[in-house]
Each structure stands twice: as C-alpha cells, then as structure tokens.
Amino acid sequence: MSGEREGGPAVRFERIALIGIGLIGSSLARVVRRDGIAPHIAVCARTHATLDTAHELGIADTTTTDPRACVEGADLVVLCTPLGSYGAIAEAIAPGLRPGAIVTDVGSAKVCAIADVGPCLPEGVHFVPGHPIAGTEHSGPEAGFAELFEGRYCLLTPPPGTDPGAIERVAALWRSAGMMVETMSAAHHDRVLAITSHLPHLIAYTIVGTATDLAGEARSEVIKFSAGGFRDFTRIAASDPVMWRDVFLNNRDAVLEMLARFTEDLTALQRAIRWGEGDILEDRFARTRAIRRGIVDAKQA
Amino acid sequence: MSGEREGGPAVRFERIALIGIGLIGSSLARVVRRDGIAPHIAVCARTHATLDTAHELGIADTTTTDPRACVEGADLVVLCTPLGSYGAIAEAIAPGLRPGAIVTDVGSAKVCAIADVGPCLPEGVHFVPGHPIAGTEHSGPEAGFAELFEGRYCLLTPPPGTDPGAIERVAALWRSAGMMVETMSAAHHDRVLAITSHLPHLIAYTIVGTATDLAGEARSEVIKFSAGGFRDFTRIAASDPVMWRDVFLNNRDAVLEMLARFTEDLTALQRAIRWGEGDILEDRFARTRAIRRGIVDAKQA
Image (cartoon, rainbow over the protein chains, first blue to last red):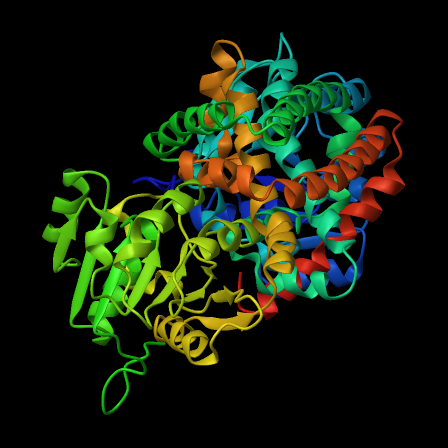
C-alpha cells in the first residue's frame, strides 16, 4: 500500500513542519521517512521531553517549542494538535509562513477547523483541511507507526475556491500513507463523523464511567468479566481525553443532534424491555447485521 | 491451556447431551473431543439442517430433534439454547433424565435460568447453572472453535444446597476448556453482567440502528468511514438477535437499573457539551483509562 514508486515518491516537499507529534503526527512522520517524501521534518511540541522523544525515534530533523520557528521555510505545515489549540497556533504561525505554503490538519471536526484557522492565514498560503480516519487508543510519539493509515479513508474538506494543486498534493501525501482520499464539505463531514466516531466515543466514555462508579467489589469484577462486550468499550474509552474534549466542544451541534436520535432509539428499546416486547427487540437486533456485512465487504472491519 | 493431562482428561463423562449446537455448544463439543472428556456426544437441535452440519463437523455421535431422547442415558446435559427456551426444554427433558445426572447451561442470565429450569427437574438430578463468558459475533455450529474459552472466566451460580461434587465436575469441564472458574450468587452475576455485557450490547444495537436509519447517502458513508470507533459497535451488534432478545427479557431488572445509571451519566455529558464545559468532559474522559489498564493487566484485553 506504500506510495513509493519507481523513480521516487509520488509527492515531494522540501520541508514538512509537524505541529504536534502524537499518535497521528508521529505516524505521518514515519511515512514521510519511509517514502522519502521530504528531506527535512521540523517538529514542534509543547515540551522538551516530547521533542527529545521525537529525536530519539529519528522522526525529527529539527525541533522547537515555538510554532512560528517550526514553520519557517516549510512548504507543508500539518497541524496535529487537539482542535482547541488551532486558533492560537494559526495566529502564531501566520507571520512565519512562506508564500505558497500549504497548511493542512488532521482534526476530527472540520467546520471549526476552517473557522479557527482560515481567517488567520495570509494571502498566498493554501489551507486544505484534512482528516485521516485512523487511530488507536494509544497516545504520544512512541505510539505511532507508518502502517496506521493503510486501507483507511482520509477526508479532505477544502472550502470552495481552494487551489486544486494544493488539494492534490495533500491528497497524494495521504495516498502515499496508503489511504483512500475523498473530498466533501466540512458540514457534511462533521455530521457523518458525529455518528461514526464522535458518538461512539462519547458512549464508550460514558459506560466505562458508569462502571467505574459502581461500588466496591463490582468494580473489580467489571475488569475480570469484561470479555462479554465491555472490553471493546474500554479500549475506545482509553483514547486521549484532551483530544476528545476538543472534538465534542468543537462539533457540538452535530453531536447533540446524533445524540438526540440515539437517545430516542435507546428509550424505545428500554420501553420494549420493560414491557417484555420481544418482537420489537428481535426486529431491531436483526436489522443491524446488514451494516456489519457492509463494513466487512468494504474491508473496513 | 488444555485440560488434557498425563493419565487422561481432568474430568470424564459417559455421555454428554448438548441441547443446542450454536457457537457455544459446538465450541464445547470440540473441547470434549479434543480432550477426550466423553466417548459420546448426543446433540439436539430444532432443524435437521443444523444436525446434519453437526454430523459433518464430527462433533455429534447421535443427533435428534427431540430433547427428551437426547438426554436419555446422559450423565451431563448442557443447555446451549436461548434463555427463552429453557422452561419448555426443562419440562421436556425431565422425564428422560437419569438419576444422578448433572444439568448445566451456558446462558447469560442466571436468576431466570434457576427459576425456569430448577422446578422442572426431578429429585436426584443436579442443576449447576453456568455462564462461560466468551463469544464472537458469529453464530451457528460452523462458528465454533475449541480455543474460544481459553483464558476467559466461567461463572457458576449454583443455588444453596447444590451437590459440591456436581459443581466440581462442571468446574473441571470448563477448566479443561481453558477457563478460570468462579462461583457467585445468581443475583450478583446478573448485576455484574448487566453492566459488562448486556448494556454494551444494547447500546451497540441501538447506535448501529440509529445509523441505519440515517437517510440516503449518509448510510453508505457510515460503512466507509466506520474506522473511527463505529466498526467496533457493529461487530458487537452483529451478535445473535434471538439470544440477545432473551437476555434482555430475562435480565430485565438489572439491565433497566444499569441503563438508568448510564442515561444519567450520558445526560450529564450531554449538558457539558451543550454548555461548553470542557473541564467536566476532560475529567470524565481521563478517569476511564484506569479501568482499561486493569483489563490489560488482567490479560482480558
């Protein structure tokens, strides 16, 4: 699935600036190294400890805690930080961006990304919002691996009028990582991801929290007897708390809408359980198998 | 993890009757074959097609659609059917049970199992309710495999006064399958499983149903873009609809109680999202990592 081809990589940059070097940023850095996409990776993080780790992992050529210094001379800047940091980072990097530079991001909500970043960027800089739909429950630069993206989808949500050449170069970067790239509006992205990613995480965090609150012995037993379904939720609920806080704060309307639909449906099943309406339960449970088959057929299982 | 030891299996029966030969029943049959636990496996199922499959898989010595005929001469009877069938099956097999026979089951709710089966069994027959906490999203005799149970817990919930020798023989059977066996009250079992298994399944069925109801294009997109958390829910929601219908009908009170707690907690998070209370979200999300660590440490991940 790698983008390496005869005659060199499918896309090339001179200097890639990664703002943030967690699971996604460090995985992308490994792809860039593997495929020879850029001779220089500049990494920005808030702590020297993180930057030292990036150095030791061999995924950073230069490191700094200053976002503006990081982007100097870069022809590609990738924001890999929690969504809540976008506004401040965009303001900080704006004076350092070189003309023609492409700025992209990997955030899980896109309307807010465009609202927070777009207005800060100078004329002649291209903003191509992106979202590689891939991840694990692990965080930090050590958690990354180049194969994280393989066979998954990356969604780009460029505002109307975005330079097609810039879009294509970002798309080529993610195709090099093994992703299938699609383009859609930011608003549509946020609605679809609200149901396929944001709501599942909210629910997983909730039920694991509910179990955590159980008194005494029952709490240790939920750990021992988690194989009946619960453990899958605990994996999802081990995801990065700050990243997910920012997703919910920044995709509020779509999440609340999907949550309202979910709660209606859950209440209907609750009522069927209370009144012993087995036909309703069986009917609802049988319907959901079709979606699973679709996911298996689409090789996303 | 197999129970096979020098000098023969850790437990031996003359004739094991399996009522139902789905994922769990057929996996247990494979363990019995592998470890030489019984020279004869009698299988009962509702359809000849299922029985033919069991024959072809080599996991049945005799087959019948008549539960009473199946248990004739058996010293161990294992109910591996949905919970809703227990009462009728117990009534049907009672006249065929030989004195001293052990009856056990694999159902996911235990108070109802005792209430439905116990009163039907004749004097001198031992009932040892059991629940091997293992499974996949696949159903039917072809889905079984002997390793399904390895490293997982099996809970036994014998009523007070149950013959200790009978309990030990059922425990030895599941240990042979590689399980860790614990004993607890049926009521306690039903409460713990309500949060670790039943509620997760109800929630997974619900959210996949909510997504299924989305109009038009969004429905196909939830399949393509499911890698962000949703696909794990679809796997759980692909479990057997009839089995799960019966779990919810038969563990109603514990499920409704845990569901009420969950809904309270979800509503609190919903409010925090609506009002932009990031501290509350981050705090709740950070708490749940401890449970995940516990599950990883307990080798149940």
